[in-house]
Amino acid sequence: MENIELEKLRYPIGKFEAPQVYTSEILSKAIQTIESFPERLKAEVQHLSNEQLETPYRPEGWTIRQVVHHCADSHMNCFIRLKWTMTENNPTIKFYYESLWAEGIDNKTMPIAPTIQFLEGLHYRLAFVMKSLSESDLEMAYIHPEHNKEFQLREMICLYQWHCNHHLAHITELKKRENWK
View 1: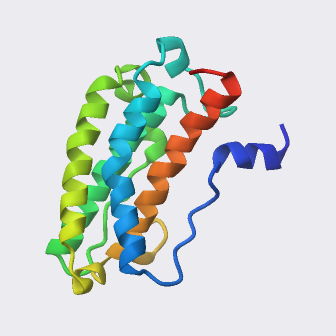
View 2 (view 1 turned 180 degrees about the vertical axis):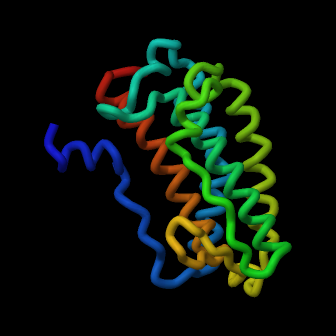
């Protein structure tokens, strides 16, 4: 498989690009996407067989099961980063090795239903807190040690909107290629 084809499988909606300006409309849409993610994810995966859940979305990629569990891992870290940023002054967040987390027994073998339920509650909380952020709250930032970069909450919100859509597209594009309903 050529690099261009593999890149399209890896990033079916493209890589994250931060908006030039964070308008209230952009942030509202991003929060709405985050809030609806568990429902949209559930609609795509709840009827998949175990065999389908064990299918990688790309060569040498994660299985659908791992993608679902990864979303919970990542978005749980998002929530923790959000809370740290709201309660500390420019905290340096804890980096985690998502690829190693994806290889854990829970991510590789656990049923997805409990993770979908977890995401429903988690995303309700994420959206609830994000909707409450004032203009000055949105300027609060954390430092990500992997990138040695400061991220404002407004950018984090848009990044996780992209993350939801990015992994959902992994699943929907695989379903199209495999002709799964």
